[in-house]
Image (tube, rainbow, N blue to C red):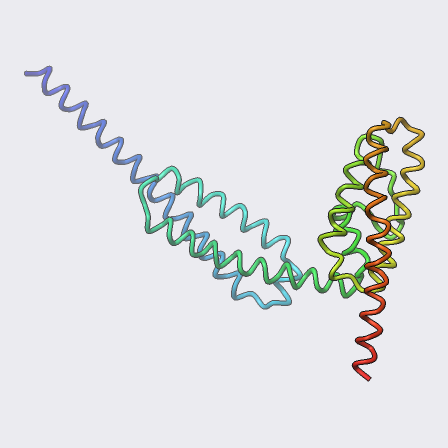
Length: 224
């Protein structure tokens, strides 16, 4: 009898512990999701000029809250209402993010359109006004050319005549770096692949550049 009572007591205690753990996880999930939703709502009410100027800090804080909410929600497991609440708020934030990132990029382009081109071709911050390609070496130069050519094909329809002038300068600077890299152990295989890219790029660039010039001349005449 005593043994049965002991077992019953242990089972009851275990159940209470499990229930308590479950409640704690549920409470943690609810608290972190509510904090997340409140933060997103607060971001949406920030004046646009302030949001743009502080977007880096806003997004960093958002990522912390998003991670916490998702982690606690995963631990709580069964709670569709909270999951839906989190998903709706996440969609709201993503819309804000797209809006502000587009605005920031537009402002950056207005201030320095050439830097936008450099970032598209080589990655953000890799090339500045000094046109320093010292980071390009025998091991990565083929990929740099491949990425350059792909970026060109992806964006050429949007280039103005001034953009083409900048692309020409970037391409010539990359070619100049290639002359140096060739002496530093560039493999013949990579060299051949780069030559193939250059063979395809040169006539394409020439035709596209002429087309951009003709298009802008026509647009100028139409305005008059």
